[in-house]
Length: 522
Image 1 (cartoon, rainbow, N blue to C red):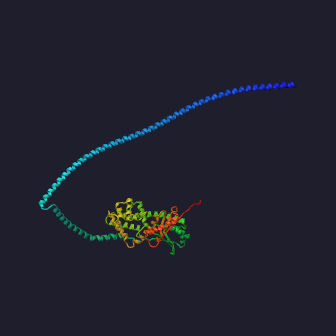
Image 2 (cartoon, one colour):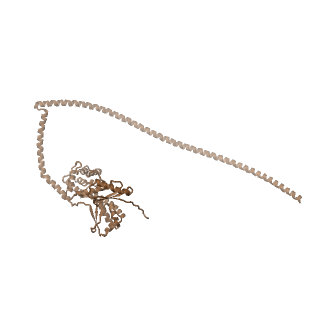
């Protein structure tokens, strides 16, 4: 058994060895094939890489050449443009040089002609001097001959001739003056009275003196409580927005509006009428209504100006002058309504100019515009006549009209016949009994001065003189004036009023500072 197993084992081992050797030989041959294939693939890849590299190289070379050509063309364009600019500059320089050369030649010719003319002038001047000397000698010779013939000297003869002519002229002048005076006495006074009385009769209208109070009528006294509001908030808001003192007293179905400025009074009256009609009376609504009413009044001023100009037959008036005419409705002069006064003066001027044979339209125009300097948007130091003349010149009025405006108070010299007519008609309009009142004008001026003092301090937004000038309410900007500065500002304003103004009684200065935070709920 063992003799059989041992050969079998040996045979198995020999078979395994032969198999391993055969496997190795087969694996070696496969490795050689794979290596050869790999080498072939590597060589083919290298060939393809070389081909791709060559193509890429050629493309890059082509791109480089194209870029070079493009840059070269751009560089040539830049060079060409620079050369063109240089050539243009050189051309302009050559043109200027030619112009300068021509100007120099021209100046040279002019200098030569001027020198020639100067020589001719000097020659003629010398010749003239010689002739003058000869003429003086001949005149002296003739005077000597006349003195010898007459037996009088030249001065004596001159005096005698002048005295005889003077006496004769004086006699004739006295006779002429005497006859003129006699004729004037017969006709002038009568004609003047006729013209003045005729014009007054033709334009005579009833006039009432402007005051500072308006009465607002109510349907019932129940509305008074709504106007006053809770704790007086509504009436304070209305007074603050309009600058008008609102007096609610025991007068049945009436509220008194007091203010020196008619525009403010009218705004307050219309605003109160709208609030009462609407029924919604509260501070926010009051401010809204007051702003709308201010716009309405501005439009009404323009309409009043246009209507006045049309009624008087005046054409081509500048819109700013039309607006100034409209503002006259809310201004007074010595208690006399300025628009009514100006219309009356315009009519008087037109009639007087027609009676005297002058241009009545120009006279009307000057009469209407003679007091436009009293309605400035801002205060001016110039007299109203000169300010009105400046406005008229600015807005294209004729010199006659401008001179009449500036000279109606003798501020400047009268240069046209219209000027004395305007001056006389202005005096006629203001001379009627009750037409003017000096006290009111000074009162209004005092109130304006009070407000002007407040506006002279920084941070002041609005200022209203109320209570007949016994109180000054000043509204300040909350961002510029804090609470401590508000009291300081009130003291400074009161001290300035005390030092600079003259007034009866006391003036209370109230500084109001308000901060609002507004949000909207959506």
